[in-house]
Image (cartoon, rainbow, N blue to C red):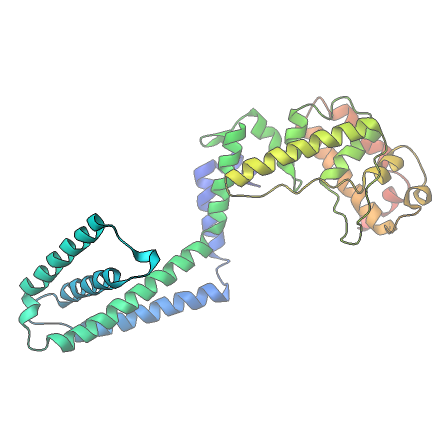
Length: 333
């Protein structure tokens, strides 16, 4: 999806579009609750500061100096291993503390007769502001997660030569024509010529690895129908491993591990075997089989659009699997 948005709008406009659309999904109760609490805190803090108004000067400023002094004293009093300071650090903090105390004594509000009363109100306001700052950070982390993920995906695409700046490069235009979950894995497979010399049944078997998902109960080793298929699958697995490592470096994960569980069945079907022969000894239902073949047909059509070189193979492959029960049921699923 990222590459399609970039191709259509450019990277920056696509990011802005994602942020604005996600704003509508902020009906997440937790986020709404946090926002309400922030507003409540801000209103309460404003009331506290109003009660802390001093005729001698800015009492909020005075209260902030007091708070800084308390925070610094608290740091210096820590004796555990996590808060040890060398002599230079301690001396620096003690010098800062002396400066703060001097600022406090020289502040116009220091001589106010109601100083301690004002201070209580101001300190409550400061605590509320600090709580709100923490809540805002939590909201920020939640509400901008899509835009941040988009940025990381763009960094991966830039690293691999799919985009540059605002626009997709030639390889990015190929990626934009693939809509599978493992779009980048498949595009890298095409880029490396792994599918070029495969027969139609071999192509179908190999491509099935990026759309099929084995059920949790399927813990047996998948059967691989031909050495050419095995070689291509090994190359795809290697590409996936490289992509996973690159994405991990950029803090994102988009490409599902290839699954070889449908390679044998799809190869047999493409080779002209009957449905009963293809499903013999398998727990797969006819409906599941047809759904997987339908996904393969969709993906082969995408590849034929993305790669002129692979178009004849893809067209041949589609003819081989769009037959029998698939042709009959495909419109019903």
